[in-house]
Length: 334
Image (cartoon, rainbow, N blue to C red):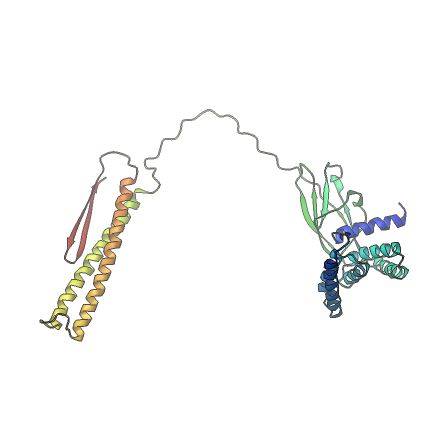
């Protein structure tokens, strides 16, 4: 392989690794206008020192309309931002396109930039090592396939961290990174041997049939004590309701001494306060009665629905309304 052909292949490889490639279809008038707007924005950003943002605008413009002037601008932008391999690849392409379109001035400028960048390139040489004979072996760098013919060559890459992935059918893929120093530099890396992929576990050996374990004494979705606990809380709530009900009754009786016999609603300030306390106690008594009744009913339901170990269980509930609230009782044999 002569030097010119080798340089051409390296430049092509650098383009593959640095950019995805540019569409070559003739852009429409609207696309050209959009590309020109992006180009002008890139020029303004570059002039103001925002090089990274300028590169983004030039790249977007080039994707829409691959004009030679935009290619020069993007290559220069990459060089200024330290992406030497990307800049070298684009200037190499610009040189070839300028020559093909008979633009000697631009061809000369591009050739000078290519020669200057060649002295500052960072290069990476990747070797498949013991994996070279594996069928279907693939190497990716930054999510782009690295052609097999370029393995072992000194590939120009942008300085920084490069993401690598080596894979083959039936093998566990290897994923790693390599840091390439700012050029001129050369980093050589031999990739590790791929381990075989994990095989499926062998089927279990036949074993003599065993008798099923006897069922547990209690196998319900909840423990037995849960129903009794909830029922007990319900009874406690009803008890509190009874106490509050009696207090409401007592406070109301006390307020009568502070109110007119002729008009029960005509009361002194202490009488009004007693009646207000009586109403609050009555409301609380009602709330506890409702909550306690709901808990008691829920507890009874859980006890009745729980699977039993033996027959002969009985359960009885008694409730009694009083002047001050409600009383309830729970009796049973288990």
